[in-house]
Image 1 (tube, rainbow, N blue to C red):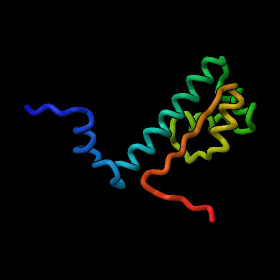
Image 2 (cartoon, one colour):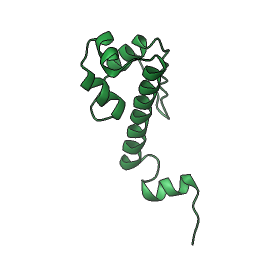
Image 3 (cartoon, rainbow, N blue to C red):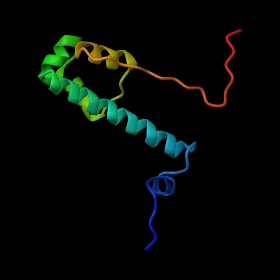
Image 4 (cartoon, rainbow, N blue to C red):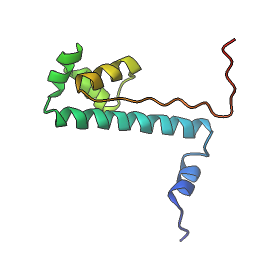
Length: 103
């Protein structure tokens, strides 16, 4: 039986880096991690989903969807949630092999 590294398995089962399938997989994985971080920070602050929702002006169901990745989410909402949880957020945007002109 052949053994694969994690990177080889991802390439074989999901697709090579740069393909649509792989990009979608990595995007969804990052969203899942954000949901996990929100849930972890909420529990650390000893807040219920309902209490967190009230802090940012949304219903409990939206917090649940956010934590479980079942809805589209905006950066604005993510920032509101982490701000309410008194957590620092850093976004890193890196342009790969592209030149950007602001002319």
